[in-house]
Structure formats: C-alpha cells, structure tokens
Length: 492
Image 1 (cartoon, rainbow, N blue to C red):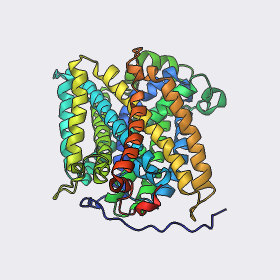
Image 2 (image 1 turned 60 degrees about the vertical axis):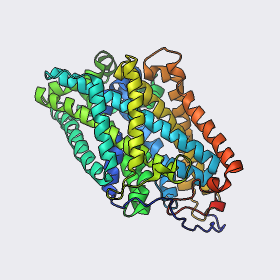
Image 3 (image 1 turned 135 degrees about the vertical axis):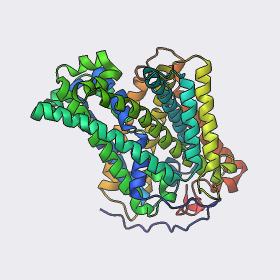
Image 4 (image 1 turned 60 degrees about the horizontal axis):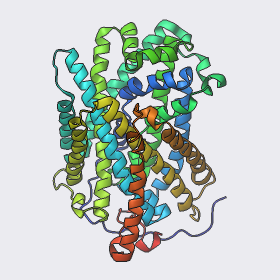
C-alpha cells in the first residue's frame, strides 16, 4: 500500500562550482558502466577461477544469481534516482537516506575503494601488456605500461567525458564481438550440447564452492552502479540513470552467463573444474586456439589489454565524480570541484586521482611486488569490499528514504531493497572470509588491508561530527548541493 504522508518539499540548491555539461545520452552511460566491468578481462581472469575453486559447471547459474541480487539492488537504486540527481553516487544517496555523518563516511570509503580499484586494474594492465608485447618481440617492463595507461587515463579524464564514452564504446564492442564469435563457434561444433542443462541443475549450482563462485561473479560487476554518478552530465537524468542501471546489470549478466555456459559445453561439465584449475588464465585462449585459430587468439590477447584499459578509464571517471562532489561540498578541498572552462570536466579531481594512483603503483613497483598476483589482486579485492559494503548501505538508505514517502511501493522500495541487502551482506561476508583466497597470499598484513575501509568509514563519521560541532555551515552543505538536492534542514 502506498503511503499518504506528504513528501518533504524539495528546493534546488545552487552548486558551489560551475556545472558539468549535459552531454551524456543513455547509451553512452551504459558504455561507461559496462566498460568498467571489463568483459574480456572478467572472462579471462575471473571465470576460470570460479570454475576451478567454485562450483565448476554451476558458474553460469551463479552469474545469473548474482545478476538477480544486483537487479533487486537496482530496483531501489533506480527508484531513488528519480528523486536524487547528482554526481555523488553512493555519497549522495546515503546522505539523503541516512544523514550527513554516514554520507561523509560513504564518500571517503568510495574514494578509497575506487582509487584502490583503479590501481589494481592499472597493475593488471601493466602485467598483461608486458606479456603480450614480449610475446611479439617488444620487451617493455610492466611499470612503463602501467605508467602509460595512467597517463592516457589522466588525459581522457581531463577532457570531455563524451570522448571517453566513445572510446570505451569501440573497445567494448570489439571484445564482446570476439567472445561472441567464440561462443558461436562452440555452438556450430557442438549444437544443442553447447548449453548443457546440467549447468542449471540444483545439484550442480548448489555444490560446494557456490559461495566462492558467487564472490568471483560479484567482482565482475564492480562499477555497474556508476550510472548515478553521471546524473549531472546526462541529458535526461531521471530517465537515463534508471534505464542505464537496469541495462548494465542485464547486459553484464547475460554476457557472462552465456560465455561461461558455452565454455562448459565446449569443455564438458564433468571436466571444466579440473581443466580450469590447470589452465587458469590460458583457458579461454586455448579455447580460442581450438575453435577460432591462432589469429583470433592474438586478437583476444590485445583486446584483453584494451579491456583492462577500458576498466581503468571507466573506474577513473567514476572516482573523479566522487572527488568532485566531495570538493564541491567542502568535505575535501574545494579546489577539487574546479570544472575545466572548455572541456567541462572535473580536471583537478582527475589530476589528483592520477597522481594518487601512480603513487600507489609506484610503491608496489619499488617494493618489487608482482603487478598481478600482489598489486592487482590486493587492490581489486580491497576496492570490491568497499563497493559491496557501500551497495549494502545504499539498500538501507533506500528503505529509510521511502519509509514516509508518497512514492513508496511494496516491491520497488521495500521488498527489492531487503532482498538486495540480504544478498549483498552475504556477499560481503564471503569476500571478507575468502579475502586471502582472492589475494592469493597468506600474508597477515595483506589480508588485514580491508580494515582500511573500516578506518575510512570511522574517520568519515568522526570528521562529520567534528564539522557539526566546529563548522556548522560547512556541515549543512554535506549531501545538499546537487542540483535536485533537498533543503539542508531536510537532511538528517
């Protein structure tokens, strides 16, 4: 039943900095979001691990389950996006639902999580680019490749966002096309056996390792929620953000489920776990050799690198928006809110993020750490923990926001967020419980890194309470300067 309690009146508040330019259409937002999920690198890197140490042939159904959890999250997220338009993503949503102190905690956690994810992807790019270049007679150390990728991402982040969207569209279409050709080639050879029904049989799906497979599946969706970050740059945000969110989840789910299902058909349901355990990152390259030939495999190797760069650029762009909004609302230095007069981009935020990411990668390089098994796995795992925790907090914020709102609905704003919260809380527990498995190390110090997220959240709460006591005017600006923000006194 819909509540009859009148809604709080909302009045626009002026932004503290010149506005971002509305240049993004719904398809461009989808390309930005899906590219951050890096389809090719997710298939090559995460799917074999899910086969090997997860539930084997049940991986396609596990991706479907992960997609259903995130669709439930998207229902409430999209419902709230019709009332909250801004570039603050989790920060703004949590502020509008749970209040200013949780908003500051969420903002600092998001900055840390996305910066870690960018650094992790940069390390993975450097590693694979070095391997591919060496295989073609061009031995270049991974720090050079990583530095070059970060520099290019910095340039793209400095310029207009629609240029990044166009580049990501080209890269994503190419990698999806090659993997679709692989699935088609498997289908031509195996016919109806390409998609074995046993992959969705309960005894296969709920086999030991389901939790680990679900964890790897959810890692493949990192960044899908970023559609809301581009609300201020969308031509029609109240339509584009919900549509782009739903489209991104559906596309990612269908893509990963179908490709992983076709691979089960190609290898055999009873052999896929063992084969993946032996071949790991070579699994899909060997399938390509068998079904498409060596030339296609070479193309896949190059597209793996471009896929990782697409993820790097997508995550970099999302992190920029958090720094921009936190600067605009003076949670962080206000200089981060500067908008480039010609490109209409948060260029200061892009530069700061680029320097911070380069510093993280530089520390790992100087320490002699492995770019993939240490830098990439640790930073990506850390970023995933933070992002999943924020998603769970947003599910709670949706429930609170619509508790007395006239647009409350039994499914969109109540049951769906509850189901999402249950699924995300379970996923967060799995991530923390299996963190050492994801990072691939037994180091106590490495596996305690998730405490950094707790530290960021607690530090954000403390900083917000300090602002409330010492700088009340600055405190009132928190989560209230987006174009469609509520009046400061309406935010708890």
